[in-house]
Image (cartoon, rainbow, N blue to C red):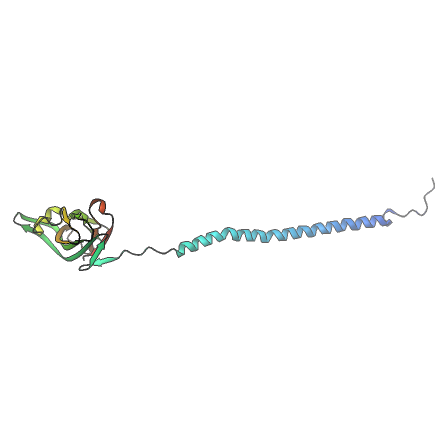
Length: 207
């Protein structure tokens, strides 16, 4: 069979080169799109990370900026203290190891702290008071109750035991506490009332 004359080789045909250019161009475009996509993802991840951390930082700032609770005011001997509708004023204190009257004598291996105070009623009705309304607190947080049995040893009457004060009047009396002999720093805690009227307190520095 005779060979065909003038037939161009495959790689010299024009449409082969056009097809090659198209394929190369498409491949290059794909690489550029891939690079562009990769570049656009990275800043998105950074922004996302910042957004996630931002609320934590804001919450921390809010906690740091929260105002601290103010320390409770403490009063001294001679100052009048108001707790709701009742007022208190400590006139003086005495420390002793014994108390006595016509009934006899009471002694302690510690010490008796006798608090002389005046209570006023600013309510519009009579208010009951009692020695159970008072506590002595030491600096280490220990609490001491009053000793109502000893009230009759230091008062001319029954003192504050189940007493009643009418509106706009006051009553003065003494309350006795038994403390360890080495108790140095302590304060009197006074209440807003007896029974349901109680619940609010103020502190008076005694020593």
